[in-house]
Image 1 (cartoon, rainbow, N blue to C red):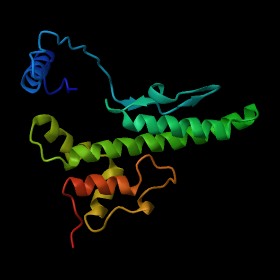
Image 2: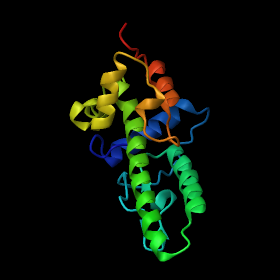
Image 3: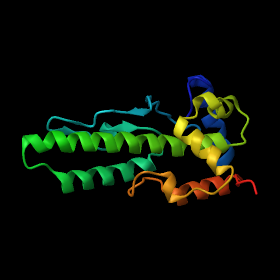
Image 4: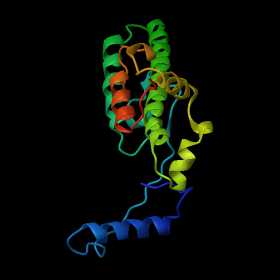
Length: 182
């Protein structure tokens, strides 16, 4: 995976070839046929429209490993199955609730993924650009400010079904050397 704003296609292919040549016992570079897949990260702001509900990659795509998407699929399916409306009037109510909850959840996924970039000590342009304070969502910026003085807590998050609860943030923060000031 690479950012086309930071490296061109040919250089990315060469970097992959060099990596493969260096890290495999035999020369697989002859067999290497990279496939380029382009994507725009983001999510829909309206997941439920009339009688259609976007779940999984049809709802959004934030990062290539997409571990968070698996949790979003499960949360979406659970909410849909538990709140399936019995009539048209209820459909509009449930759709509004669903849309509000999943906009919140996708924003928290972005915060959690962004946290990894913000805490990184890497100095390549991609990593520096992603540490730029102007690119940090307000919610994450506020939390990081509070976490300078205390550890993340469950009360920092609004939902009982967070994709990434306080413990997940603790693992990343402490694992990357971020600790509250005494």
